[in-house]
Image (cartoon, rainbow, N blue to C red; front, side, top):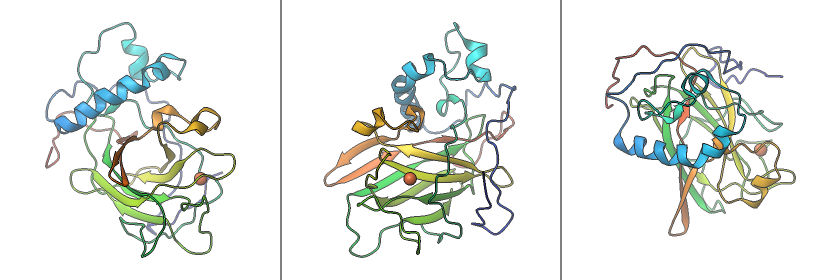
Amino acid sequence: MERETGTTGDGIRDGVDGDGETSRPKADQGGGPSRKTVLRAAAAVGMSLPVALMGVPALARTAGERGVAPEATPACDDGDDPTPPQMEGPYFKPNSPRRTSLLQPGTPGVRLTVTGYVFGRACRPIPRVLMDFWQADTYGTYDNTGFRFRGHQFTDAGGAFRLTTIVPGLYPGRTRHLHVKVQAPGRPVLTTQLYFPGEPRNNTDPLFDARLLMNVRTVGNAKEADFDFVLNVPQPPGSHPAGH
Ligand SMILES: [Fe+2]
C-alpha cells in the first residue's frame, strides 16, 4: 500500500525496488568511489557476512559468485546488492521541508550526523537523488501535525548526502531507527529504514535488518553515523562522474 509522497511535486511515486534484476553490472574496478568508501565497504561486508550466508534471497551476484573468491573489491557498501526496502509505517507525511538539518533551537536529544553516498548498481555515485528523512524525537514521538524531524534533501554532484539531526527515541514495539525514502531522478522510490548497532531491541524487532545497520561512532557528546545506499539503477560501465 504505497501512496504518493508528493515531495517534489514532479510525479514522485512509490514503487518496487528490487524487481527481479538479472544482469550483473560488475567489473567496475577503477574510478570508483574514494578509498574511504572502499574501506568502509570492507568493514560493512565483514559485519554483515553471517547475514549474507544465511538464506538472504540470492541476488544475481550472490548466486553467480558463490564459492568463488571475490574478483574485485566492491566499490559500494555490500557489493552491488541493492539496499533492501522496508515498510513505510504509519508516520510518513508528504511535503517535508527541504533542509539538511532537522535541528531546531532548543531541540533536546543527542546530536547525530548521518553521512554517506547513494550508488547505482555499478557502484557509481548518483547525483541529485531525493532523500526524504523522517524520525521520532528523543522521546519516541512523531510530529504528525507539523514537520519536526522531517526533511528532504538531494545528493550532491558526487552522490553524497549529510543529515544533521538527533538520535531518535524509542517507542513501543520498535528498535531505534530512521525512516527514509530515496529516489534517483526518474526512478522508483526506495522506502527503507536505518538502524543503530548495539541496540538491545535489534534482537526483538521483527523489522530489524542487519543489512540496514549504520556505522555509528561516538564523538564527544554526539554520534556520527554513515551509510551508503545502493539503488537498483542501471549504470553503464566506464562512466566516471565528477569527483570520483
Ligand atoms: Fe518509525
